[in-house]
Amino acid sequence: MMNKTRPAVPATGPAIQAKALTAVRGTRTVLRGLGFSVPPGRITGLLGPSGCGKSTLLRAIVGTQARTTGTLTVLGRPAGHPALRDRIGYVTQAPSVYDDLTVRQNLDYFAAVLHPGRAHRATRATAVDRALADVDLSDRADALAGNLSGGQRSRVSLAVALLGTPELLVLDEPTVGLDPVLRRDLWDLFHRLAADRGTTILVSSHVMDEAERCHRLLLMRDGRLLADDTPENLRRDHGAPTVEAAFLHLVDTANTQATAAAPAPVQEPR
Ligand SMILES: Nc1ncnc2c1ncn2[C@@H]1O[C@H](COP(=O)(O)OP(=O)(O)OP(=O)(O)O)[C@@H](O)[C@H]1O
Image 1 (cartoon, protein in one colour):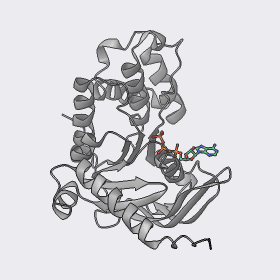
Image 2: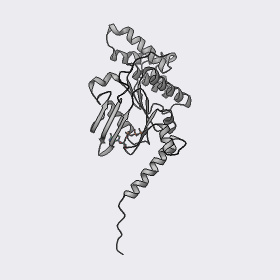
Image 3: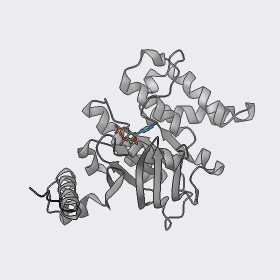
Image 4: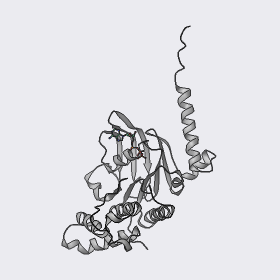
């Protein structure tokens, strides 16, 4: 059973709200005027093909993306505000763990950054044990991180993000490379975090079957939002058996509209 922590975000306000959000990387406009809101205490999936801008949007939300314009409010503050640092857990695609430390030493190190000083020794030990149990790595606590499988290493990264009991957990493709059993276990953990701790979870994926496990979905393509809805509504509105089929229907509709809106080709005189 998890420790119950009351969500710090009022249940009424959105955990994340974006208006006309745009981001430029290099010479490319990668996010194009996004507007959406993410409800607190729920799992929102950010889905779309590789390169559509998912990681860029997550980076904007955690405040590490330069050259953004528009409005982006996270837990009631502008994205990137220093007060948000210990309220958000962020797991990037590449696991950030020290290979020459054991799993527990990795967690002890990051716990010491979060809660420094002797006075917090007991808090750190409790947080580390709980994070290890959360990601089901208690029995590998003394293994060197460098000797773990890819899936185990990404679970250590997730455990690091859970150390501070974040109100918002931002996860960039956390299930890539995991076998079906581990994927299912991880999704069970996300649901327990949302239900028991009130954690808001924003999780990106390009695997459409994971969309069915989310409470809400943001479907992206080419830096734009194609949909912001529940899986049930998407399936119903598009008469589709799966979210994947609904997504494909949305893509086809967007393509048809783009073709119809394009100017007719000029006829060259013969
Ligand atoms: N540093 C950069 N400079 C210029 N363009 C970049 C840079 N990083 C990413 N891009 C471009 O921005 C676009 C969006 O990238 P992003 O990583 O956000 O996509 P993604 O949906 O997360 O993809 P994936 O699922 O493959 O991780 C891509 O077209 C990518 O080529």
